[in-house]
Image (cartoon, rainbow, N blue to C red; front, side):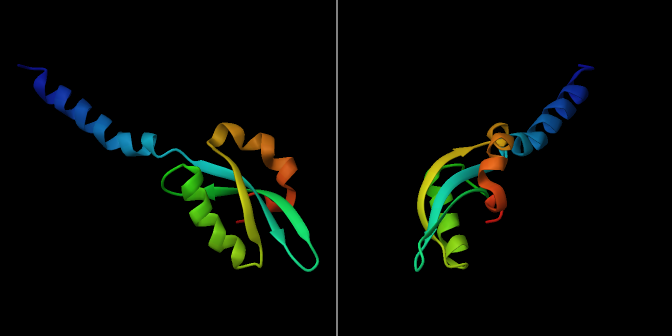
Length: 97
């Protein structure tokens, strides 16, 4: 079997590359507020780990609170494909938190 060694090398290479492919970038867009006086903002943030609304909420709540903001809602979670189209809408809150 002359093909065994190259086949094993190919399988090993694919297995090593799999985590990089499976861990795509994840982002969430959200709304937050500050009281006294009332201020609202829309933002986009990078999320690590699971790409879900619950993970986004768990990560963004303390990030925003550290600057006096209260998370109102996670609008959606998405990958790189939806990132550029949200840049102008998020303004200064684009990838800030």
